[in-house]
Image (cartoon, rainbow, N blue to C red; front, side, top):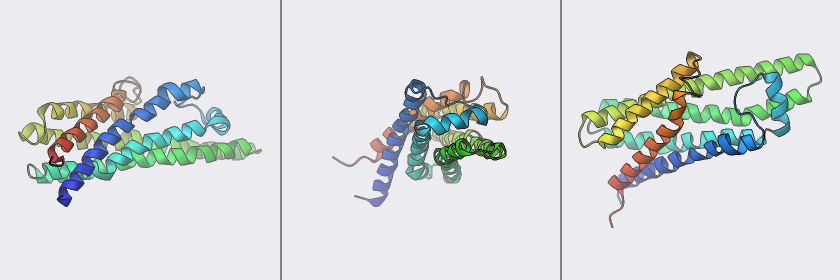
Amino acid sequence: MNKDVEVMQLGAICAIVGGIAFVVPMVFIFILMPAAGLNWGSMPAEQFLPQMAQNGGLRSLFWWTVALPFFIIFLSVPGTLKKTLETHAPGVALLAERIGAAGLFLCAFSSAVLAAGEMPLAQAYAASLLRESQIAIAAVYDWQTKVTALLFDVCGFLMIGLWILLNSAIGLKKKGSLPTGFSAMGMLAALLCFCFAIGYLAQLRWLGEFGIGGLAYFVVPAWVIWLGIFLWRKYKPAA
């Protein structure tokens, strides 16, 4: 089998598996964490850190499940999509690949930082007997939260939205490059990603993660899975 075809098939598999993997953090958010009495939203460090120290293992695992799908997609999907579209619009396809890879990496990286970083800070806070130390630890936690939020909610989703937008624009403009319905869905997914990021920056709850932009958690994985199915059919092994 041609090695390029094998690479494209790997990209298709990563897209399907990565898209499906987004279901796992949803299970944590809507079922496992509420059942355990854990608040996955934001709260003051003085309230959050003691709770995290006592029963935060599930939350740490949640952040790993958030990082996983972004990382799986990052591994191969942007490059595979670029190779699929480079004969139609090489410059735009290359730009989209680099933006998409950067956005996916930032989302995976920031989630991994929270997965590995929240519990040590919480344990240090709970173990500290000095109020000054607790204040310093809470400040570090607040800094960690703000930086990872900027990387994930703003930079990551803006870049992922732009990646989807550029590729979908190629699909709509160049007939035969991508399915029309898939490209139209990509335009919607990109718009939701932008709402997600802008809502966070503007502190508009109705527009961001807990409003319209939150639909990106469902539409983007669906778009990625559809992409994987399209790529697999395009590059599937001959019978």
